[in-house]
Length: 301
Image (cartoon, rainbow, N blue to C red; front, side, top):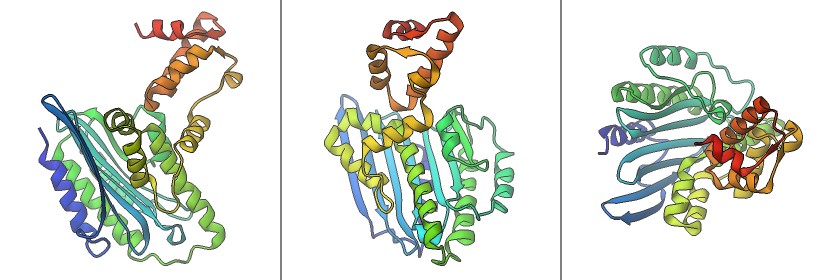
């Protein structure tokens, strides 16, 4: 059953972003797959603003069981405004996915203020933290993260309101296009790095690919990771992520057979690094140099 927190989150976003985006001025991309007694659906709304290249707001349902909302605000690099990211989903309030953070794209940005807000809200929440390295790579120390554990919806909505208002009042409203051309390049690179890691580890894309097919995935990727700087190529994202999060056979000293490598590629992107890590850890313990598909499959039994 869909939690009221999903709709309440959308109301907060529209309310606090008033005069920055128009609730009635957006592009919408939607897909739905009906199956026996269940359905999967996603709707992306994309907004533009004076100082943001794109605001992406997604609401989704997976197999009529899990519901969620995702917000990513990408700034225009010349303004140097941080990225704002938010996700709420799962089976609220028992198994909650919750991430909220303000992510600098230039070195000069301070965490003064937001660190106090983080302490205020995280101190009243339990079950925080992430075991997934890619999340730690894109988020800051002031991120509030909960992965499939109980969390009170009221506390989530309070944190969303205060984080979003802080981002708006501290960074967006006073921002001027004063970032030098020299600084704009690393700012663009940091935005693109965020999109790359998010794309390469987004479990939702795996689900949408199976439900809607490649043609719709191309539309979803364009909506979620487009604008300037845009993540245009799925191949580019996978290559960049492999550089950041996966070690090659030559780096580790292990020999991976073609069948074992194919097993990794057939697995969802968000678990590939963990499968590889576990296999090499066990191989090291056993003194094995060659990792085969059978070896990996036996680890999972």
